[in-house]
Amino acid sequence: MQGNTVQRGSVEELAAHCAGWPLLALFVKLISYESASDPASQTVPSSAGQLRLGAYLLSLLSKWGIAATQDGNGYVRAELPATPGLEAVPGITLVAHLDTSPEFTGANVRPSLVTDYQGGDIALESGITLNVENTPDLRLCLHHSLVVGNGRTLLGADDKAGVAVLLHLLKELSKEGAPAHGRVAVTFSVDEETGASFTHGGAPCDTPYALTVDGGAIGEINFATFNAQEAVLECHGRAIHPGSGYRRLVNALVVAQDFMALLPAAERPESTQGDEGFYHLTSLSGNSTEARLALIVRDFSEEGMGRRLAYLRQAAALVEARHGAGSCGLTLRRQYGNMEAVIARHGGFMDLCRRAFAQCGVECREVRVRGGTDGSKFADAKVPCPNLFTGGMNFHGPMECLSVEGMVKSYEVARAIVLGLAGEGK
Image (cartoon, rainbow, N blue to C red):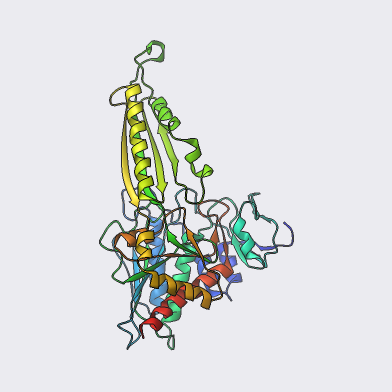
C-alpha cells in the first residue's frame, strides 16, 4: 500500500477513534450489529438481527427525545412534526433499510479507517487489495477518509450508512433552534435485500414525497430501477439404478443443467452493463431425484421483462418436453417495478433535489441503478422516491467500503432537500 495510513482495530476501538466525528462513530456502532436478511425464512422480519438493530435504534431515538415505534414486522418509524406555521408544507418520508445482503456474511465486522486517501492500493487484512481498477469510484475519493472491512465480511455500508445519515438528521432537526421544516417521517425498513420490504401492509407512506438513502458513490441520485422478477425451476427426476437406466432414468440435475444451457451467456450480469437486463442464477441445489434452481431476472423496460419471462416459459416447456411430463415446473414472482415513470411525473421534486445538490457543493449525477431500492415500492403507491447516495462502494461483497466525506455529504443533501420543501411551501 503506497502512502495510505490505516487505523486497524476492533469496532469499539475504531468508534473511540471516531469520537470527534459523530456521524462516523454512529455508523461504526451500527455495523457491529449483524442483520442480514434471510430469503429462505418464513418470518417477518426474516432475521432476528434486524429486530436487535431496530431495538438499538429505538433506544437512541428515545435518548434524543424523539418518539419512535417498532411494529410487529420489525419496521422502526419516527416522525418530526412540522414546525408550527408550516403544517401546510409538503411532508416527506425518508427511508433506509436495516438488513444487509444475505449473499455474504456481515458477522464480526472488523473495520479499518484509511485517513487522507492518496490513491493507489489499499491492502485489506485478508490480502484483498482495493484500487481504482476494481473500485473505480475511488477516483472520487482522493484525500477522503475511507472505512474498509477486513476482506472477510461485508462492511455493512449498504445500508447502515443510510441508517446513520437519517438518525443523525433526526437528531439535528429535533434540537432546539433547528431550522424550520415541514413534516418529516422516517422509516427504517426490513428485508429490503430480499425484495420483501413494504409487502406486509398498506402504502409505505402518507406523504406526497419520499427519499431513500441507499445509494452508492458520492453525487449519485437514482431515478430508475430495474423491473425485477424471481424465477424458480423445480426439477423432478425418475430414480432408477444407473446400471439399468437406459431410456428410463431421469436425472433432475441434468434437467436443471439443460434449462440453464438454454439461457444466453451474453445476458448474465458479468456480461451486461448500462441499460442491459440479465438472467442471474442465485442458487442451485438438489440431487439426481429432486433439484431446484433460482434466478433473478432484471430489465429496465416492461416490454423487455415481458420478453424475458416468455423466454423462460418457453425454455421450461422445451426442457419438460425433452425429459417427460412433470420433469420440471417454473414459478415466477414479481419482486419490484421500475420507479422511473412515477418520478418523471414529479419533475418539480427532482428539480428541488438538484438544487439541494448544488447548494451543498455536490455534482449531481443522475443514474439508473442496476438493482432496486425501497423506492420501487413507493412508486407502486404512486409516490415519487428517488434514491440518494451514501458514499458506499462495492456493495454485497468483501470489498465493500465507504467514504466518510461521502456519507457527510449525503447527510447535507438530505437535510437540504427537507429544508428545501419548507422553503418551497412558504
